[in-house]
Length: 93
Image 1 (cartoon, one colour):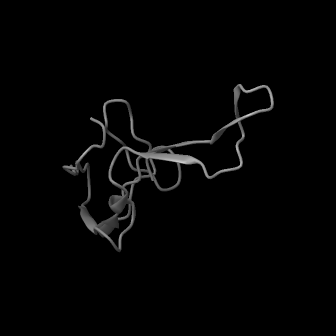
Image 2 (tube, helix red, strand yellow; image 1 turned 90 degrees about the vertical axis):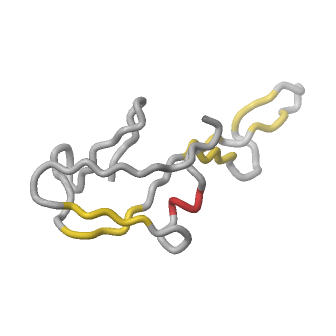
């Protein structure tokens, strides 16, 4: 698991910082999204968070990359330092 940095890079970890990944070939999923709680009008007519509808999800990378059954990505992890690039479409630039 890794968080995406502002420069669109990430460092994989399994058990904490510096944990790394197990050696070998792995399936990879990439989930880059923002979840915003719905906004609803309150009695005074102004908008307020906490609406009763579902949250609004914005996908930065198309959703199919987040599921291994729709678009399987793989990566080979070798001993030592590894740099693995994925050329993915970015929604909204």
